[in-house]
Image 1 (cartoon, rainbow, N blue to C red):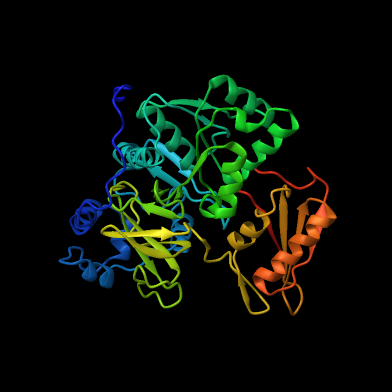
Image 2 (cartoon, rainbow, N blue to C red):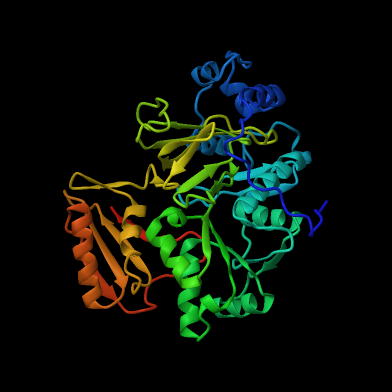
Length: 423
């Protein structure tokens, strides 16, 4: 099934070409999953399930939320009732990270898994990865979907995939050098961490020959300050990507406009809504909203109009839209400090504008009448004072910053957990 390594991979879709109408796929999806899919058979009971227009679809089909899925898993352990086929036909087991509650188990049948891999190949091609390239994966493979799908899709398209799990950061850097990898796939945090370790052991990452870094798991790849920090340290091009275990691989940075995150509209019906009013936000309105996705080809474990919780700003791009600045934040990550909305990505952007800062931690103290925000950063007292000044200038808010010794704060390989809330 692998392609000829000498044959170039198909380039990403030309966004000026006509985009297929998603309505036929939406009708095919509903016909394929009903009435066998118990979750949606009950949720859509009494509603029309074939539509003549997208407006009719969005006016009829209700949103699906993660809270609903969690309740369904509790009511129908261990896998929930979101499956369209008999359980013996499902061969892939993954689960969500559980950062906002109990992890959800998500199963895939062979056809749905092929669809997942097709989407990841689109991500790789969008980052300029070709058959015959060598890609390094510096993490241990847990139950999250993204690691497995990205690795397997790479091998399927003819990329030599090097597993770097079960090793220290130092050993990973040496293996990366020996394998002569040209592609690195990791979180933005870990790309910076590997660079720090390389500097400490006399192996600068800029000497390793990496030319492309695909980052995921955090919004850093679409934050200009974070992206520039990684690219300048590694001397490589950074491409952002995001997805979810329950949704699949969704996006990749534009080759031509680094601040744009392209969505896989061929595989997902994409919408952006106001999180409060639930009204659809039109691309180009300069509004931010919540990304809503319908999985058009994952018939075995589908999601209809799933509220992802990702805050984005849609802008016109080709026949559909892209995301300006990538995933800006999570709806439930924003905190209000004395009337000012603070998103983690905004703090990250300011911190990463100081290349001399290592790791950092944010503390949100909600135990008093006024919520307080403070930072602890691995740097000197002088730089901590400069950062506090820059934060005040950016947010018009006094944010205390304290210095910590290098290596004293937690480090992360996968999703960084820098925000601590005291209640």
